Amino acid sequence: MRSVFALFSEFDKAKGVVSSLLNRDISIKEINAVVQNAKARLNLDIKHPELKAEVSLYPGKTSLEGLERLLTGIRPVNTQDTGTILAAGVAGSILGKAAQISADKNTNSLQRALVSFGFPQRTAALYRENIATGQIMLWIRSPDRRVPEIVNVINDYEGHDIITIQ
Image (cartoon, rainbow, N blue to C red; front, side, top):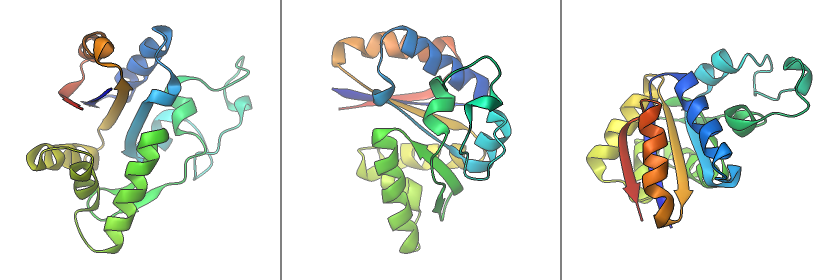
C-alpha cells in the first residue's frame, strides 16, 4: 500500500478528484482530506458551525457523497500552525489528532504530524503553508498498482506537489 498526497488550490477541483476516484471504485474509506474549517464551511454551503449537515440542504439528494460526505460531521481540530482544520477520513482523523496533540505542546503541529507520517521536513513545511493559506490536501491510500491511475486523476484536476509515501 502507498499513500498519495496532493494539494489543490480550488475546492471544486478537490471535489472532482474525490468523485472521479469513487467512480473508479476507490473506497471512500481510503480517501482523506485536510482543509481549514472556514474554507470547508464556505465551499460546502452547510450552515452548522461544526459542519453537521442534514441531507435536506441538498435538494434531490438522499445522502451525502464524495467530499461532502467526508467533511460533514467532523469536529474541527485546533492547530498551532494552520489554525482550525478539518481532518477527515480514517487516516486523516489520526493525522488531525496527532496535530492537535502537538499543538498542545506549542509546536508546528500539523507540520510535525505530517513528518510523523513519513513526509520529508521540507515537504511537510510546504504542505503546512499551503493548508494555512486555504488549500485542500487530499490523501489517498491505495495498492501500489493503482498509484499511477490516482496520480493521473489528480493531475487532471490540477493537483500539485504530489508525493507518494510507502
